[in-house]
Length: 390
Ligand code: NI
Image 1 (cartoon, rainbow, N blue to C red):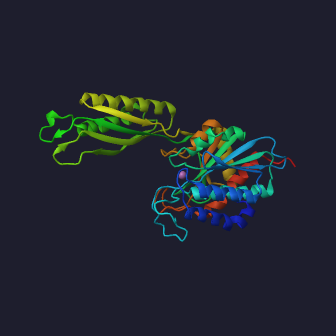
Image 2 (cartoon, helix red, strand yellow):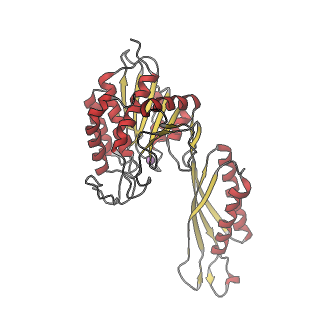
Image 3 (spheres, rainbow, N blue to C red):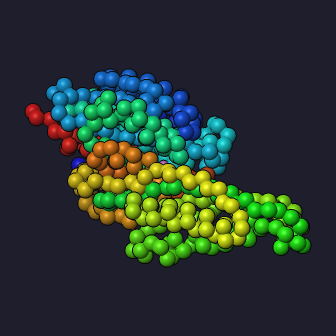
């Protein structure tokens, strides 16, 4: 095919929605305006059902095929939330809200799914049901989980679920994916090392939380280098080390923060266990006490085999020969679509964003040329998975 012809006519309209979302970024669960606009547009397309307030500010739309919706139900998911970043793109549609911006392209994801919804509601060239999922709080708030906890998969009996994210540095019109783990589990920790403060010139009278913390940071490096099989992946990064505020004082305590990223549940478990043992034992060895706040974050994003092969075929039908890399290397970033893939079989894929700034960068912008390919992918996915028996 390549792209769906009707979409070329809708491109300008979809771009206008995208830029409107871009101008009005909302973070986490605060996506009230965005959700309202999504719901209004869905209503205006004449979809069969629109439900708001799922997972706080999530929106669900339903489009039934020509056979009245009987048969299989596909869930298509877009995320709506922005990031707490100050935009510096200088675009005419740049964020009007200081300190917030769409730096991950969720404005584009939402617009592309709306574009597909408009087309699908108009043409209904399929048998079965499409559930359009617009979720809040992908960026650290587990909005996908909140929607699932509100009954997303059962109120609308979704059989398979699909997600898509733009990928800077890959050409517009290309797609990539892989079977199995594609993005990492993201766990976070805060460690408070309780020592005993005192005069810097009399360290023997203190329990130095800085020396203890330094040993902990060093010892944690052994999780990747000496605990986990080198052919498996783990990242342990300490990203903050705060202690003290004077040249001549050994402080009472120190705080470490960081993240652990893994691509399989067994490694995730081992890494957490080793982390606990190392932190507690090293602190004890130095006479200090470590208080650990370990937060298990998003699970590993694991693509299901059959649905991923199917997604690759659909993507190639849209992008043309050579447009699909179906065995991209996994990335150590996280994505809460993982929760949806734990509930139902499906696939998470990337679509090229061209030579843009990276995700979460203040110069990042979603590439409007990618809209045609992303929306076409959604449409083709539906029409191929749920063919209309004419
Ligand atoms: Ni994102």
